[in-house]
Amino acid sequence: MGEFTFPYFYNYPPYFTLQPVKDTREKQIQLWKELILRFCKHHKCFVIDLEGEFALFENTSIQRKLSFEAREQFLGALIADGRAEWLDKNHRKCLILWRRIQDWADLLLDFVRENGIELMTLEEIISGDETHGTELAGIDRGVLIRAVKILEQRGRAAMFKGSSTDDDGVKFSPN
Amino acid sequence: MRRRPGISGLQGAAQARDQYRSLGDNVAKVRQDQMKEQLETFRHQLEEFASKHKNDITKNPAFRAQFHTMCAKCGVDPLASNKGFWAELLGIGDFYYELGVQIVDICLATRPRNGGLIDLEELRSLLAKRRRAVSITEDDCLRAIGKLKKLGGGYEVFSVGRRKLVRSVPMELNRDHNLILEIAQPRGYVTVEEVQSELGWTHGRAIDALENLLKEGLAMVDDGAPNGKRHYWFPCVGPSSSVESEAEL
Image (cartoon, each protein chain N blue to C red):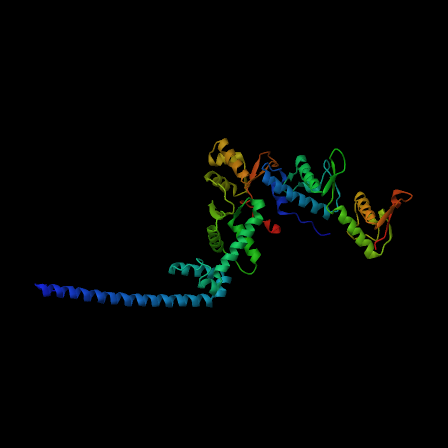
């Protein structure tokens, strides 16, 4: 994982204030949406807590940080694009889909095909030796389950319950 | 000529006048022919020079500028037409045509960020980076923009303080706006109070002009300054404008 490169606007103070003029604000939101997705992808971050600290939302080198309202707007715009979802009713925790569920499903299928895998527990996919160093490593459990469900619908996988949640697994029929 | 009386005298005078006139005409014609010939030779030589130094003209900015000065002194405008022998010989029309296209490109690409106003120096360095091998001078940019101007679309260069800005969208920029851009230059932003104190304006006038610049998309507000004062930033001027923009292009 290389160093994350911030875009020019991240060091330009007004981008940390929600812009009052509509056109300018739309451009600002667009830039932040792209940045949030790219940042989360780079750091494999799936959930942003609006009330917690999130490194991206504060740039200490220029002493600026996003207001609560700005964070809410940017995440709201991602949700409208289908690239994020609120995880709770109070809209405090936000799931960031820097890769769509659909694309996670494809990635998973490609992985088991290439490696000739037929059986894996969810835990193995998330943090096992086989996926270590691949893009699948560190996948959010909730996201993984939804990706598997898509494969189930396509008849490419079947989920089974283990004796504990750690043993929940997937049987793949990739071909 | 001594005047002689009588009809024959008058006739003689008329005859002499005719002779003088035809002689004069002859002389004028000879001169004109000579001039034509000289012009032809000159044109020929200029063409020869241009085609011989075609590479230098397109590659070397200093040479190009000198060539333009020379042409201007002779009253020749190699950019006037893209159809003439210049275009065929040199593609010099093409040179500025291409430059113009790239300028439009950069103006469009940076517009979301700067609202359609870009520092000429920033534009020049972006152009130079894009073209890599061939260096571009301010003079080249001005010529290319001059051509764009004829196409409409609001391309124009104007001065703010010591800098030149290129405007790529039609907008109303009055003297007040210009003054604000000028005092914003050193740091890239101003506060209402600074506008008032530096320009001796009332609060209303300062707010009015700043709000206008905001609406035009040329300014952005920043409410996060440690001193709590609202900063009005101008992406088209100031230290931050030319530094990090490359990544986006």
